[in-house]
Length: 133
Image (cartoon, rainbow, N blue to C red):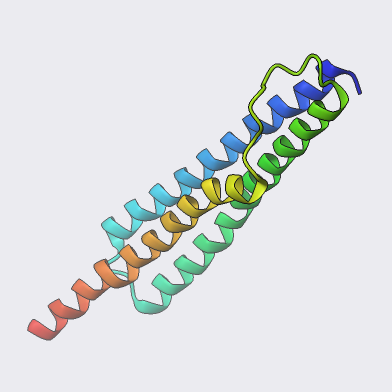
């Protein structure tokens, strides 16, 4: 693999990781809007089923982010070993564990926060309204 091809793989993986993270954010915001608009009126079974489907749909973007940024890290390591005199990004990259944490923890927090919003904020206000009536 030439230096250009290796660099292209790194750049394509970065773009695909960014696209996967944007897909993740779009799904989270769509779920939050649906929870805000219809969360109070949904029966419990449908709310749980919707949350389960939502969770299943979030797995591919999360996996895409982890996989692509792992490829970026490995590509950077390959470039440093294969082309040490021409690789222009001089600072050593962070460890893979730190990189994965930087990208996945906010995503997982968004997922858990959206589930909390649906089931403990919107749905709880429904239960309190039923008790008052």
